Amino acid sequence: MQFSKLIIFASILIGVASMLWFFIAALVRERIPNVLKPMDGYIFDYVVVGAGSAGCVVASLLSKYSNATVLLVEAGSSFGFLSKIPLLTTFQQKGLNDWNFVTVTQKYSSKSLAQQRQFLPRGKGLGGSSQLNYMLQYEGFEGDFERWASEYYLKDWQWSTIKPYLQAAQAKPYERLDIPATYSKITYAFSQLHSEFVHKSWKYRAAQYNIKNGLRFNVLERFLQPAYLHNNLRIMTNTLAKQIVFVRDKNGKQNKVKFLKVSAKSENKPQDQTFLIEIRHELIISAGAYQTPQLLIISGLGDRSNLEKFNVTSNAQLPNLPMVGQQLHDHLIIPLFVSIEQVGPTVNQRALLNPLTWLKYIFMGGGHLGNFGVLGFIDNTEGPISDHYSLTLFGVGAVDERAFMAISNFKRNDFRGLFPRYHNTSQEGFVINSACLQPLSRGTVKIDDLNIRKKPIIDPNYLNKAEDINCTIKAIRAAVEVITSNSFSILGVQIHWPRLKGCVNYGPFENDFHSNQPSDDYLECIIRHVGLSSHHPAGTCAMGLNSTNSVVDSQFRQVEI
Ligand SMILES: Cc1cc2nc3c(=O)[nH]c(=O)nc-3n(C[C@H](O)[C@H](O)[C@H](O)COP(=O)(O)OP(=O)(O)OC[C@H]3O[C@@H](n4cnc5c(N)ncnc54)[C@H](O)[C@@H]3O)c2cc1C
Image (tube, rainbow, N blue to C red; front, top):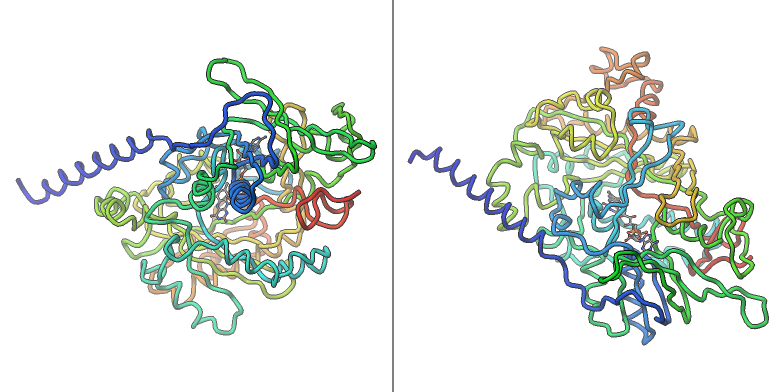
């Protein structure tokens, strides 16, 4: 047999063997030892709703550091093995373990998306969104905590108090993957930037992933699984929290959370079973930024004038909490595609079909499949917070049109205007994502139905504030400085300014490709067209001192009225 035929035969064999291995692994579901059967009559000291990033940590620490009985209620079950392989993570979006939320039509943004609506993936099952997120580890920013402490009187959140907790939560070096400068020619160029831009106060960070031995390593492995051994912790999977039930205390003065009404599938009954769980001490709602306000509103905690139209009834007189579901904000990223002349460093079809890529992953857990493709970050946290921005270096050269459109909702022509080399699956290059770190635009989460199974009405209201446009323009111009730097010049870079039908009056013009300084009007136009959610929703149960600007106090208790 000729040598080349031998190589082809060997690669097919490796391909088939690894697919078989992943297929078998996908069929083997995680065993969860302390799952409870759905039925009436349970009483727990603490009940935690939602086994996502927050819920897994809270439930495991509560059960570890107290003798109290703890129940963790989760709408989904376990994720398949696919969630563990870092590069394949986006294939979970739109799948069984994704809640599949979509925004309402956006007024100021998302013009390149069908109906101007953004897809909002959220994880459903043990681990929640940390099972389908991109596994990137970020450190808290000191300035944010200091600002919250002083502006909102949240003394417990000042940096000196919070830092030890953040440090304790951080993955140990052996539990994470750091992308080194030697990873590729792109990371090498990235590592040289700081000596070129000495006059800038940019902060450079190589990507750090929550990946251990080539597999996702998240709150499930780090916190919840070790807590499976605690005999005071129980878990209810496939169980949806439907409503919080309050009662008045003996002298009729204060409301007390008494029960959680849940709905679950039981083995021998086709219909869902609804039952009550009694709560002795506290109920902790950690159902994420969209579903926490949804559950509160359905239970009668929200803006009273709004609740009246839904006829929410409760035995207790619930307080007016107008901030529930308000203040929604999220990062919007603008991807800019850059092609390079070098062959080899980026993720594309050629790299993925190379048997060496698979061998490297199967035997060492490394290479392209062993991370998500993000290589590093540059943050600007100088000046007023409305100017803070971040650049993310994403080492993907060719994007599969169908796969990308399926998870981003892009219209075909605009997708092709953004990635002009869309037809070349072996294209080498990278994407720089520019984002404003502290957007001022605020949106809402509302409901139009009291049924928890109906999706909440999500309106992030992206780019409602002009400051967010100005900040993002600054970010894109900073991205241009990086791409056209001496450090990156060895890669033979070319920026592909998006050609979008809705922006033709503003550019890109011939000169823009030479100067790489298109007008602000053109940049604003592309920002309003191609900006994509980076899935960091926050603010819908804001923390503060009173109900006029917040929902919970600095200890996550419902604010005093
Ligand atoms: C695609 C994507 C990529 C991301 N990439 C990163 C990244 O690289 N780095 C990073 O730091 N962050 C990233 N994030 C953000 C991060 O994952 C989330 O901020 C974080 O997981 C949110 O945690 P949470 O506990 O608030 O909510 P979740 O983790 O979403 O948990 C909520 C849980 O509650 C359950 N639930 C909801 N309603 C009910 C109900 N009524 N009854 C019972 N259970 C319920 C859900 O099923 C879910 O398990 C990403 C997010 C996404 C979606």
